[in-house]
Image 1 (tube, rainbow, N blue to C red):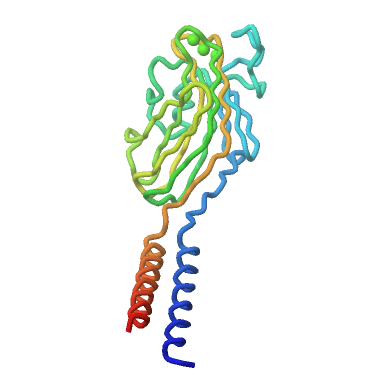
Image 2: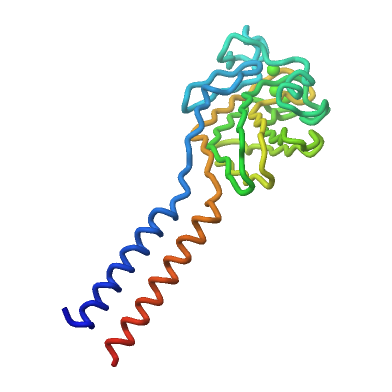
Length: 226
Ligand SMILES: [Ca+2]
Ligand SMILES: [Ca+2]
Ligand SMILES: [Ca+2]
């Protein structure tokens, strides 16, 4: 085998190795969240892939159509809902009158992990509009007053949140009546995912492999020119 062929083979081998490292390092695989593992508070039902949450009472007296899905009443004492979600009293708004939610625990998150899901928020209310919310509370030595509350838009939308701190989290996703308790809304949550931040060591690994491959390619092209 001539030295040139040897160098060529080496270069091809290193390129293949670096491609292999990149392929292994690059996917930051999103893990599906099993929504059936969440607690339901008030009127909410879950399956592994979807949750449905309303603020409608079981006998349907607050609407012309009965939107209740579980036979359970929305939580009428908002402080109970807030406590179950790890929130301080009043966090969901002093204008909130009753509501329902699912409560998810996400443990051992890293800074940069991403929570995402699709939401479909149907509002059958016209006055003092109902709200859909996401509450994000880091329970690892972080003050409940630092909890993050996000509103979900009406209609179909996708939600995404990047965790700024590592820790264990309580996530609440729910629907609230505002100022009154009548006329309801329905929130459907689907495709909930947790996407881990890429491991720094993996990024370093693929960067090194990429650099190494580039060096070998440069060496090889030099050899050809010679
Ligand atoms: Ca209303
Ligand atoms: Ca209601
Ligand atoms: Ca309402």
